[in-house]
Image (tube, rainbow, N blue to C red; front, top):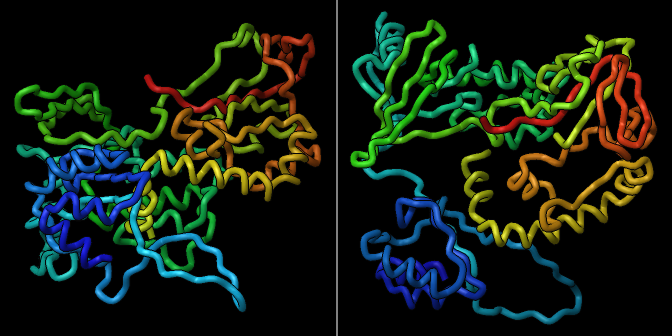
Length: 416
C-alpha cells in the first residue's frame, strides 16, 4: 500500500489518493500542505483541499520514520485453534500530515553544532545574545514557565510557588523534554520543586533566551507587514519594544488571574480566606478547622501521535473508553456516590480530556484522595451552596452552618 500511495501522492493524483482512503474520511494537516492547521471531514472536502494544495506542495516519495521499521497502529482481537481468516485490502479513513522541518534551515545539533573553541568570550557573547540590543528575534514566546518572556523572577516558578506537597500526577515518561531527557534515576512522580529546578537547568544547558521578571504590556500587528510590535516592561520599569514576525502565547489554559468567588460576609470573617495557589502547606493551619471549596482541579513522537487524530474521531474513541473506565472503577465510583460525591462522565460523555478542553476543569486525577473521602477521613458537604460568611464560619442556603478557621477556594484561574 505504501509504495502505491507514495506514487499517487508524488504525481499529485487526487483520485488515486482517494482510492486508498475509506469513509468516513478525515484528513488533518498541520502546516505540511498549507500554512495553516486544518481538519477536513468527508471525501469532497478532502478532495478540494488536495486539489488546491498538491500542485504547489510537490510531495516527494513517502519515507518511513526509520529505514528498517514501519508499523500500523491498531487494536485487534483474535482466536486460536479454530478460526476464519482473511487478507482484505487495507484502506485508510484518517490521514495526518505534519510539517517536520523547514528545508535549508537545519538545527545546529550533532555535527552541525559550533565546532570552534571559545576562549573566554562565551559569557559575554551569551549576555549579548539574550539582551537583543539592536536586533529582534523572529519568534517571541509569552510565558516561559514550561519552556520567552515570563513575569516570574525565575524559570520554573510556576511550579516552584505551588503547595509544598505537589507532585506531577502523570509519570516521568510523559514529561521528558526534547534534547535532554530526565536521567534514569528520576522519580516516577516528579516533585514540583524538582521539576522547577530542572526547567531552570534546561534553559541554561540549551542556552535558551529567556527574560524573567518581564511583562508584556502591549502587542499590536501591522495590517500590511503582519509584523508584531510587542512592548515588554522589565522589573526595573524599563521598556523594550520587539518587532517580531510571530508571537506565541504560552500562558496556560486559563490565563493568570485567580478565580476568587465573591460571597457576602467575606470582609467580616475572622479566619483566613485563601485561593489554592496561595496555600503552601497544611502545617500552616495545624489544629484549625479547614474548608476546601472546589469546582475541580518520549515525547517528540508521542506528541505527533497525540495530535494526529482529529477531535471528532478522538471524541468517538473517548466516548467508548470512558464507559470502559467507569466500569472498571465501579467500586470506587459507588463508594464516592455513597458519601455524596458527585461525578460526571464529562463533556458529551467523553471523559476528562474533552472536559478539560471545553471548560478548563471539572476533574482531578485520583492519587488517593478518593479513598480518604470514602473512608470519612475527609468530610464532604455539597448538598447546598454557600450563602455567606459569618464571623466564625460559613452559612449555607439550606440553613446549616459550618465553623471554620481557614477557607481555601480551589476555583482555578480566569482570563483577564
